[in-house]
Length: 413
RNA sequence: GCCGGGGUAGGGUAGCGGUUAUCCUGUAGCCCUGUGGAGGCUACGAUUCGAGUUCGACUCUCGGUCCCGGCCCCA
Picture 1 (spheres, helix red, strand yellow):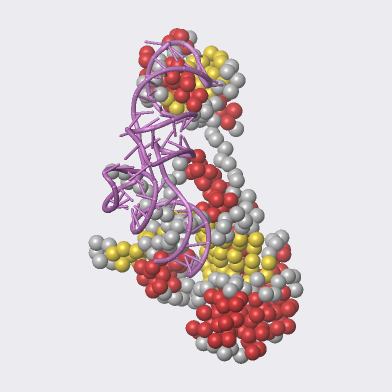
Picture 2 (tube, rainbow, N blue to C red):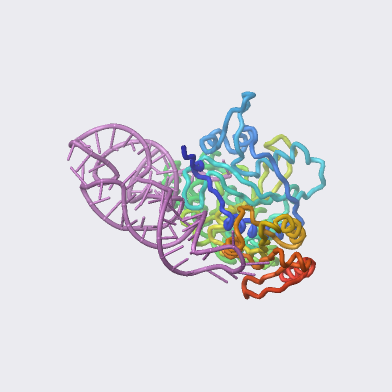
């Protein structure tokens, strides 16, 4: 019986895996240089963690299960909630800010399509303990730097939920959520219809529609003209000033709603070309989940990067390490093992385990793209040396193992 | 959950209601047991699953499943 890979999952073959690790490494370098520390949380969590954050409706999209102790569990669909849970469980006494990052697989029970899988990888950052614009700006700058390191030119949209919430504050919570959803989808006709349907006040309607299409450098001033001087606008203005200092291009977009109730202020999304319907590669904002999870009133800000979508559009290739193949005959096989071990201190070394003859070993070395072959034959051993062959040029020389080590390590630098 | 397009050796493909099917590539072996890439030969290897129509289905019909694109959703 042939067993297939589960729907929405992928096998990563060696070349692809190498590329993924390479790009991951680049992004890791960036986030570490910003002083962030990596954390790992469990692959599965209590189902409650996510229903508390997102409501019962989320269960339809989860890989949940009942364990043998009758506990309701789920594979994690994202990492913000687990990180916040971890903070509440064991990091509340740590001095702020906490600057954390993670790179882990997540699971969602969804219909797979381009850029969307049932198992996917998220690179994420959470800053815990600062409600300042400085934290928001740093997080956005970090996100763009990480994308830069993968060679992704993203389109950054920045907004602030406080402003749209201010306009909607006279409505019922239910109505606010519905409007936020429509705004987030950029469904203008749907929004119009809905405002009509709930009989929203005329000035609210005018202000809202005006606000969500404001763009450009003076968007903040225009917003001020529409809704007056509210503190959220000053905060947002401050954020933009900081982003300018970081040298980051952005589009002001008051239409970003993220659809989620726990986002409190700054929100941002980064889009990229070439991904079809799933063109968002990064999303984040400031939020407060810690209070919801039974901790103090601690603000946070963070983002998640869809790593698989990055890989879809990034064209960085991993550089291959130098490969060495040690070639032996039946009579020199045992010596070849010792020599291979020596050489493994400086390069990846392959040794025949197929009982191939000399010619076949050479042919195989060529097939796997060896940079060097080291021939360990009777003639060489009699001289206390080995033959080093450069597979590119075909040149070969009879030298000692130490000399081989030296030559190979010089070349791979 | 919905709409559309697909599924033929490990990978990529061709064809046809009528001898278990083409070509490329691959893998293993040989020509050739101390020097790779080429060439020749041999072997291995497939019609997604189920039901129906039919004398006969890889081909036609229906259903499942999986893949791809989109909708919904997207914490």
